[in-house]
Structure formats: C-alpha cells, structure tokens
Image (cartoon, rainbow, N blue to C red; front, side, top):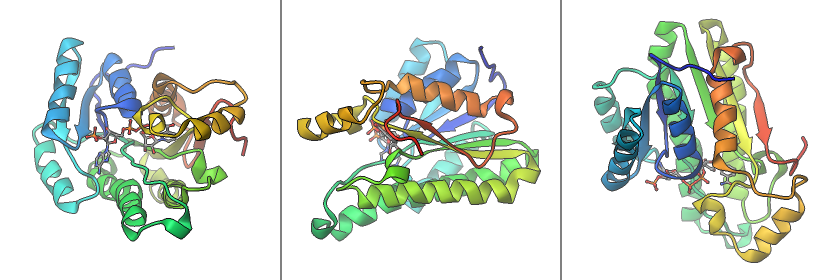
Length: 248
Ligand code: NAP
C-alpha cells in the first residue's frame, strides 16, 4: 500500500533526528511538502539539505516548542509555505531521575517541551484546519505514558497528558473532519534510547516480546497510515507500536 500525500503540507516537529526524521522523510517520499523543524539553524539546514539530496519537496525551519516566542516566530515563517493540514507533534525530550532526586528544572523542562509544546503547535495549526474542514493531528506519545516507568515520572506524566489531550481534542473537532490520534512507540533505536545505561537497556529488552528494538521507520509507517484517507474513521485513539512490550 502506498499513500499519496501530493498537495498536502505536513509539519513534523523535531525532524532533525530519530523518529521525527523518519516520519518527515516518509511523508516527503510519498509526495507531501514537508516542513521539518529543529532547534538550531544548523540542524534546520541539515533537514533542507537532506530533502534537496533526495529531491523531496519541503524545508527545514527553526522551532523551539518549549518557548512561546519561538512558536510565534515560527508562525511568521510558516506564512511563506502555507498552512499544514497534517501535523505531527513529535519533538520531545527526557530528563530522567527518581522523583526523590528530581530537580524542578527536570520536571518543568519535560512538561514545558513535551506537553505544553504540543499544545502551542497544535493551537497554531488548528485554525486553518478548522477553516478547511480537514486535518490530521498525530501526537507521538510513549509506551511509558500508559505503562509507567521508574525514573520517568516527568516524562510519563507529559506523555499520558498527550493521550488525554488527544482524546479530548478528537471529541472537540471531529465534526470538522479533523482526526486526532496518538502513536505510542516502545523502545526505538534513536539518540534518546542510546543515552540509556546498558543495565536499563538489558532490562527493557527482556520486556519486548519481539526481542528487538524498533526502527524509526516502523513508527513512520503507522503515522503515514493515520494521516491517510484509509484512516479517515479513526480518531481519539492511541496506537501502540512497541513490539509487544506493553499490551494495554
Ligand atoms: P531524539 O532522537 O532525541 O530527537 C528529538 C527531536 O526533538 C530532535 O529533532 C530535536 O531537535 C527535537 N527537539 C528536542 N527539544 C525540542 C524543542 N524544545 N523544540 C523543538 N524540537 C525539539 O528523539 P526520538 O527518540 O526520535 O523521539 C521522538 C519522539 O518520540 C519524542 O517525543 C519521544 O518522546 C518519542 N518516543 C521515543 C521513543 C524511543 O524509544 N526513542 C519511545 C517512545 C516515544 P534538535 O535536533 O534540534 O535537538
């Protein structure tokens, strides 16, 4: 099956690396004009360069979703390209620590980026989708938003918050032809999981039924499906893509 996203503008936050990069490239390979974001000029240029090398339509722009002024600036740049009808809220960070040791900054930065950032970017894109009576919003949450994980109270609170947001917004705007879904990856091979200690990696591996890490492309394909016409009747859902790590 190959979905065609010709004439669609797709916004993917955090498209410079890992899962976001795979999602952005997948949409671009299927004909979309993709706006991929990164937190620095250098990384945004990297996205542009890669699109150019692959002859993809799209661009790389700077966006820090944790700061409202960066989102406002990004909104101005967006005017040069048109309003996205497909939004993938992918950008996210971890600042792991046991709650007893967690610093306010570790709590706040994760909530500010993963949860408040999603709110800001969704709000930015919603008006045009409402007007067009069409849209697809896909939020990248996490298996730990449903299963919990020691050392990640901040991250799992933000990711569970994204799931509640997804369900409520789906109910608010379904009548406008806009679907809102979440994808909850398990343990995927990216910079984010590379940071984990060998002990944690080994204990996580034991929980994965398929006995291996996932690839970013395996998330991108599910996102592609949720954005396609084939998924027009799916909204408010969280799709688990975790190799059988958690079966909720
Ligand atoms: P990653 O390799 O660490 O990449 C994170 C991306 O987010 C980068 O493009 C980064 O941009 C961007 N980003 C970070 N802070 C940002 C900010 N304040 N504003 C805008 N962009 C920001 O992460 P990943 O593993 O691909 O994860 C992508 C998403 O999947 C995250 O939401 C993560 O929570 C979720 N997830 C990942 C896994 C996994 O196993 N990897 C599992 C479950 C869920 P720069 O390059 O400019 O820093």
